[in-house]
Amino acid sequence: MSYPRVEININKIKHNTSKLVTLCNEEDISVAGVTKVFCAYCDVVDAMIEGGVKFLADSRIENIKKYKDKEVPKLLLRLPMLSQVTEVVKYADISLNSEIETIKALSKEALNNNKKHKIILMIDLGDLREGILKEEEILKTVELITKLEGIKLIGLGTNLTCYGGIIPKEDNLSRLIDLKSSLENKYNLDLDIISGGNSSSLHLVKTKEIPKGINQLRLGESIILGRETAFGERLKDTYDDAFKLAVEIIEIKEKPSIPIGEIGMDAFGNKPTFEDKGIRKRALCGIGKQDIDVSDIIPDDKNISILGGSSDHLILDITDVDKNLKIGDKIYFKLTYGGILKAMTSEYVNKKTVR
Ligand SMILES: *Cc1c(COP(=O)(O)O)cnc(C)c1O
Image (cartoon, rainbow, N blue to C red; front, side, top):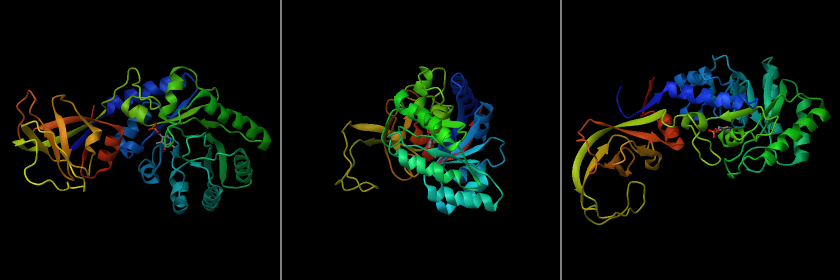
């Protein structure tokens, strides 16, 4: 298989998943494995299932469609688009919702197909991305939902640390539990799922401070990169290098560190600046900004530094590398969350699983 490519270690994903599933299970929390960062790549989905996730979740219906044959319940994370309700009812068992307009459309579509589509109502606890903020709107929405056929309200959910950077705490998450009991009493409901957020809620699980009653977390980054995302701390006994990027060298030359001639704009319309370090040995590699951002890749070899990139090229300074690198050699990088997202999305980057 040719390069560039992402090499995915399936054993490491399975290991990370099962560590986090065990941690969450101790607090009576089940895990929805979030598949969006790797575009629901089949072998990684399987590794999450083997690792013990109870749900599969993605923000894009196109990704959920890829695992339509898996037995695990499927959860659509991004609020459904009105233009996609047909696909949503067809491929997702559960969706996260906050708009009565959309819920009505889902109800109609489900009825037409003799289905019951399950929904989790999203509550905004202050991060100001999706969800209903005001108590009276929550009550009004739930009341309307209870009158709809084809739809079953199975729980409440929230999402934090995405837009506003708000950290999940005992006090904001407890509001979900309070709402659950008041809504259950008022409308005679069973709200079985209380979905308490994403990888940024994990620190509360670690310290056992997560409010009792939160019984689901939707975990992506923590499984893939072995870190919680409220403070960015590494999670004990997990891997952060299950996804690696390998790129191929196509030119090695010694060149000055300052371009020759009058400096105008680079390929992206910015005026670049340079530091004079004299003549340096540089490697040009076959990957570019179409596939990665140069700030999202971390060379395994600490002696390599990234000089920059254009749409299709990556330029590295290899002067200080001990090994004698040659044309055709491969350079390996660790990836950030954004790096995995972009490389997995690029059709120009091959994907290979290793064990
Ligand atoms: C992406 C997403 C998640 C997963 O977030 P991670 O930080 O990767 O764990 C959970 N819930 C929703 C609604 C999301 O969009």
